Length: 356
Picture 1: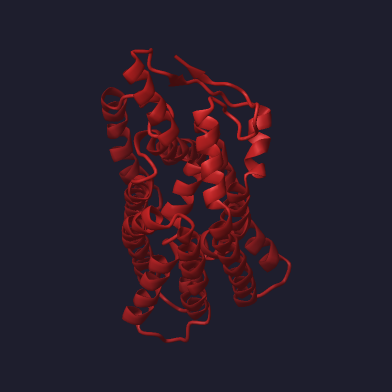
Picture 2: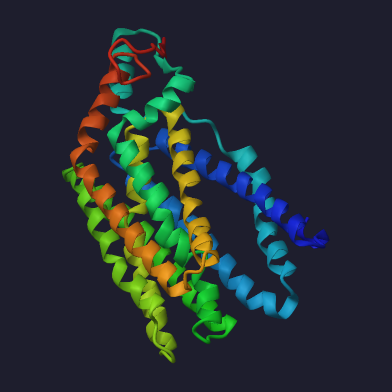
């Protein structure tokens, strides 16, 4: 479709449709991880999944920077779409539907009891309702992650680093498109390394102390302020190698929390509400780039706008993620209790959903 684009609005709507499709597939992927892996391995699995997504983003950005100036802006869209189209039939014919809630400890206990008694194997049959969607925000861990990462987290990383950094380096810091693209690629390399390494690290921490994952997320998120502010106030000229190193560190620090808060959203939500909780996380993240654009349009300089949103965004996100230290154990235990009692809400007397 991009090959036929003749004006901005045609490109706008085509990219909007692409974004909707990509967002839906990401939510399905993460929900599948919840049904394929238990709490003892979800952080690791989430880290690997996020690594693959990050590698794709890094390669796409690198290709666009290298191919675009030589072959035109349409070429990168065509190049990156071919592998995705080839993998669609592979996924359709090879992937199977996992058992819903089959990896939850409460359900495993039910399976074992049914097998011992020779009874039919119970199955989970919860469905999404409006009241359950509203109830997502009544779970403290959900509220902290969705507001902290979804709203404030979108200011610093999605807002500045992923949306404006490339253009900012090229337009305001006198770098070539190739140099700014290389720096952003270093950022993405840091992300790729971070998500998989932190997935293993967070899993080890979680398996020893569930609540300590909140401290890991909060402290590493707060530390990202240092490389963010360096990139905003970057002196010119600067060593390309040094700037790439700072961008790499930014990616490493910022994305330590990514596998953890996604895994925690799975751990505290019923199977039918996990996708909705993750969708709310994504909807809020679009707030960052829009706010920055409005501030600049309203007369703020780029440096002031970037500084303000990064300081506020990182600080608020770090505090929210750190506060998960106080909520996650209670929320996870409430979910397992509800599943053990055959309920699909955490409130006593909630809907029954087990069949068997």
